[in-house]
Length: 197
Image (cartoon, rainbow, N blue to C red):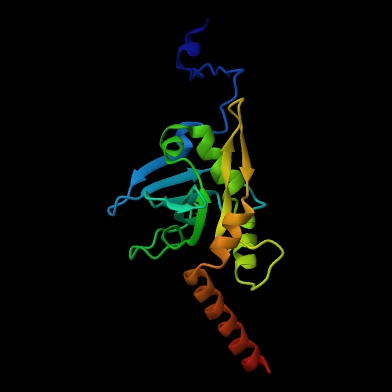
């Protein structure tokens, strides 16, 4: 070792773990309770150029509806980018969401990161939810759903799968509030077609 070697910058030793970070790591999930007592979950993913969002927010009502013996929860889901500017008036995309009804387990949402990850990536995938909403705006779609998007079933081995109950879908599709929303949407469509003509 020469005299000048003492002035060289030492590079820190970098070690890599062979264990990859799980895709449901808790630092990507932010849980909160809103001022009106609803459960709010933000799920932040790695940026994907194929999608126009990297984060999903769910604000869930704490009291379910009983539909044919099933507990169906209502919530608002929105998709946004972490890098987007946050509007000071609170009207940015993360606070304006689509209303959804689903069969979920709030206790697992509060405690199980893998369950939350499945919910956000599979059940509340933006394309999936929007396709259900589009069906809900049609009077007689192939799968009646209104704003019901299904649910998550916990299998005996502890894994998860999406489920969709046709009875609940038909029931929600024919609820007065959903029918009213459908009527408003169809009236707007007629008005736009009349303007174009």
